[in-house]
Amino acid sequence: QVQLVESGGGLVQAGGSLRLSCAASGRTFSRYAKGWFRQAPGKEREPVAAISWSGGSTYYADAVKGRFTISRDNAKNTVYLQMNSLKPEDTAVYYCARTPRSTVWYRASSYDYWGQGTQVTVSS
Image (tube, rainbow, N blue to C red):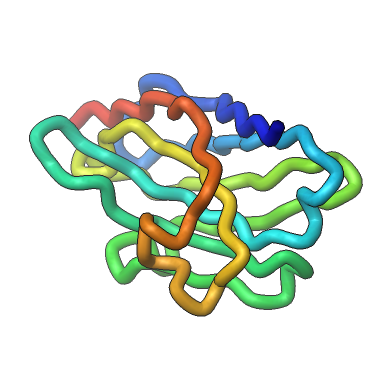
């Protein structure tokens, strides 16, 4: 069974930074791309960023490009999301997930395991 556990969320002022972590269990961690999604109240879940299994390719939604950075440490079975210059509109529950298909990283349906999410709140 694969488990993904997010951490690092919290309350931060606009312009601040947070780093989210997603720790995974399971021996096949390194062979899957990982993605971050977010869901704000009353809105649909949306893609934020993804990283290939090797870490050589990264993908970002336009809304976060230049502010967020995704990375991974396969030795620690962990993927990270560094979020800088945070805005109130970044407020959401952030989820990490696993996919065998990084070419369609933006599609939630391509992910087979999801974490429970971590709340990020950005105050103005």
